[in-house]
Image (cartoon, rainbow, N blue to C red; front, side):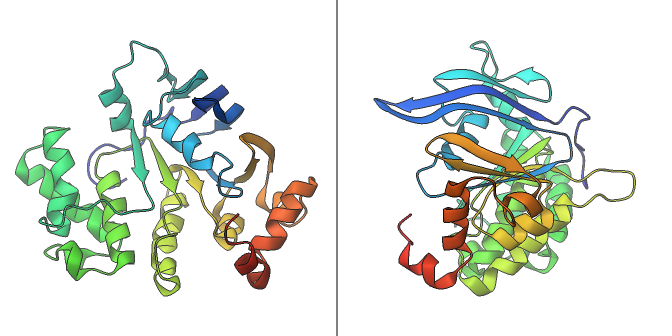
Length: 267
């Protein structure tokens, strides 16, 4: 990737027996999932199925109740793990942009580099400009969040994550807060991240999304979750076009049919 800090060779995610409970509510019920280096895995499923909790466990924003998670070969669920070191290896983009309103786009992409990676101002600025250019915002470096559209703000958030040189990227429904006409630019940036360039594989990505066309086009594998378990997984042309399980078929019939989707918005 541009700037310093390319993806390490062992940038896979390995999840085994992952469980997460909030009180008596078991949200994840034994998740086994492997993401290979350079692979794009899209996680789909109804609201409340545990998709976002899965991502938050991978970034240790939620502490797993049981099971193991390895990133680039390191067991991040080890009680002795350095959480800050783990998070430097994992970029995360949320539904909300979480930008600092008093900082420009450039400042927002620089701040974590300065505070966490201890880069000097010149180096952080160089990496920030490179990644803002990468997401199509080279002309917005001096703009504040209030001067940017939602889609532009989300692209700044992606540039901020990329500037840290992560080995894997997690996306938690990154387009769900955007107006429909702004979704395309954000998905376009994600498509570029997923593509191989020269002799370099694309970024390892675990994406929670309701954008089925994106999953069909970009994902190497689609995982359908419901009730805290993986119901089925496989190539998008099989899981989305010809699902094996009735629950998957029911879900997809609702999200792929606009009229049904409106009726079932609360799902």
